[in-house]
Structure formats: C-alpha cells, structure tokens
Amino acid sequence: MTPIDPSVPSDTPLSKLPNFDPKAVPVIGVDSHLPPVPLDLLAAPALRTRFAQPPAWEPEIYREKRFVDRPPAPASVLVPIVQRERPMLLLTERTSHLSTHSGQIAFPGGKRDDTDVDAAHTALREAQEEIGLEREAAEVIGQMPTYTTGTGFIITPVFALVDPGYRLTLNEHEVADAFEVPLDFLMNPANHRRHAVEWANARREWFSMPYEDRFIWGATAAMLRNFYRFLSA
Image (cartoon, rainbow, N blue to C red; front, top):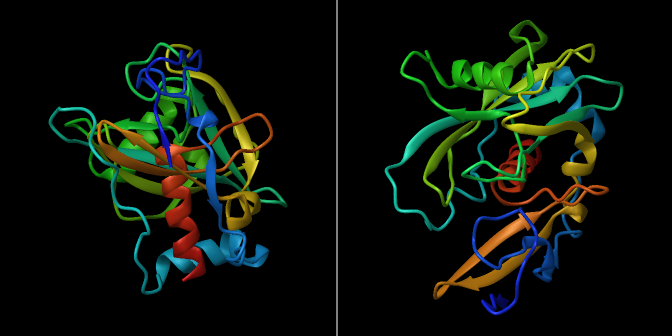
C-alpha cells in the first residue's frame, strides 16, 4: 500500500486527483491463480445464452469510495463486443480536458437524459454521440448490476454485440481515440493487477489491465472484472 506524496509532481492526465499517477502505484497482486474464461464462452451464441439465462452470481465490486461531493447521477455505458473471429472489446480514450475521468480508457457512455427510455437507450445514444456508432450496428444482449464511481455516477453496463464492419466518427471534444482489445485478454485474470493507495486518510483499491500502451484501470477495469465474474460463475 503506497501513500500519495503531495510533494512529488505528476505529469499524467489519468486522474484529477493532485499528484496521483495510477500507473506509478505498485502492483500488490495478480490473480493468475484464477482460470481464464474459455474462448467458446466469448462467442456470440454463448454470450446471448449467458445473458438470457444468467447464473447465480454477485459482482465483486459495487462501488468506489466517494471523493467528489455532488448528487448521484444515473448513467450508462455501452460494452461493445466486436464479433470478429477473435472477439474484441471496443474502448475509447477520453480527451484530456474533460472535467471527469479525463485521459482515461473508458466505455462509450454518459449520464441519462430525461428523454431516455431506459439504460440501453442511454448507452446507445451516448455511443452514437461520442464515437458515431450507429444503433443498427449494435445488438444489445443484456446488462449487469450498477457500478457507482467515486465521482457519483451510478453506471449501468449495457452489453452489445457489434458488427465488425462498424464505422466510427469520433466526437473530438470528448474522445481522443477508439481502439479494440482482445476480449480473451481481458477475461484472463492473469492480466488483472491489483493496486492500493492511501488518500485522504482512506485506502483506495482498484484493478488495472494494461494492454500494450493502454492503461485500463478504475471503473472500466472494475466493470470488466465483474464481467469476468459473470462469465465464470
């Protein structure tokens, strides 16, 4: 467990917390003892069946410690699984000037609007606004329980199978990049790293799942960890 030293400067945009670089916090554990999700369970038919007939399971992580004092806000993210021969997960990199979660790897998504019908409507609308993913390219197959961030967003993860021929148009104000990561990499706990830090007299813990030059951590990694628990239950 590493305390944050306020005298040490940080030049990373991955967190709005002052002098906090999540990439620099030591790894305290890797879950290589847990089995990966078999490849056949990551294919479209198996994923449809799993959401249609979910097992008895519980998310491993429900919420983060609050570090922003504001009213809670319902939100949704789209978890887009691209149906290639090797299933891929489509993720975004947020621009560095945003007020929350700037520069981080994230699912497309955002706050619920009053005109949204349900969580899936929010997720699809936000994905279209952020990255230009057409609704016709995404087949919603289900959702998981909410995850509450330290910034007060109550997020519903909405899962969709995405046509590999999708086209994107990024909203340059919100999204710096969009890219794919192999789903089997993310569903292998040998790639799940645990971190912990002392901040404001409280212990904060999180997962990271670094892939090539991308640092997947925080809420995105937590929801992926819950997805692993859902598929391996």
